[in-house]
Length: 436
Image (cartoon, one colour):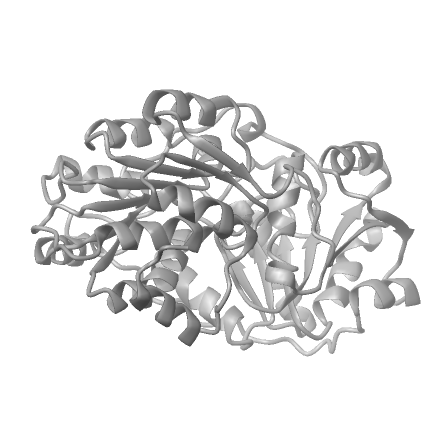
């Protein structure tokens, strides 16, 4: 495909001898210097699709202090960490330096890292805007930029920050990857990209053949017990709840039933979020309860079940939550817990998502629930929550927060408004979090 030999050797050493579909179609155009639009289902290898040609273009030169030559913008801290972890060993193979700039962590360390010189910078918009404003980072040397999960950045209200940052970069090559290429994303394309080539390896609907979809029809009074039985299953399970309060409440309830459970949402300190994800990845905590902050950008191997405890707000949210399982060809099951008042809305939403879901009435302890999810009777012996780490305080003053870090993200309208509904994790009448 024209990649440097050192990159190919590093990929083979990682057990990646052949490209995924999205990589096959986008990398040649990116290496040729074209602006590229890419759309593919989650878990399809998009990070390497933009990362490999970026590293290839940056190879053979070094950046000056505070002035990276490559820039990757992502919506969340977790996605920034994932992108960095995947690209860092490949960057080292070419003698390149990669750095991460996100909110919620010590800004002074980031200032030092930038001053040492970074070739490829992975950043959330808010914190990078902080550095640019404080002149601890400059974008005038950027020759190639990638926007990952551009539609998610639009959903979270980050596009004003993104446009200001892009305005500070030269007209270099730009790569944009997104689940959808319409609406606000299309405005970015028209303003910042020149004659881009578009590649799409999947329609914006559920098409993963290794993923099963189920609608579990439940009695509202039995919802808490159903969730507890599912949490007692073997294997890694992610449960999605609408609000931050609902996440904390459900995690506490599940630990009381004997399920070691972690809680993840945008209100947690960054070191807490990192430790929660690490425990989920290594199997210490097999159940993760999360808001939609975890619906994108989190790659954890062997997540065999995704549970929509609270039904998602729209088809796009459904697909990105579901994409935490059946990644890269693995098998996975997605279930949505549906009460009678929610049935019509949920069925319409799954149809729009292109999902053919099997509807099954279940109760806690019955054979159908066990057959579909692997549910078991909980032990009933409470387990302790991990002790929370101390929050880090940045040198800029105050605790850093926010998914994008740095400047606070504007609230979005529409689906960001208050939504009411029952939840095993509580939170009825709470404002929808989206992990902010």
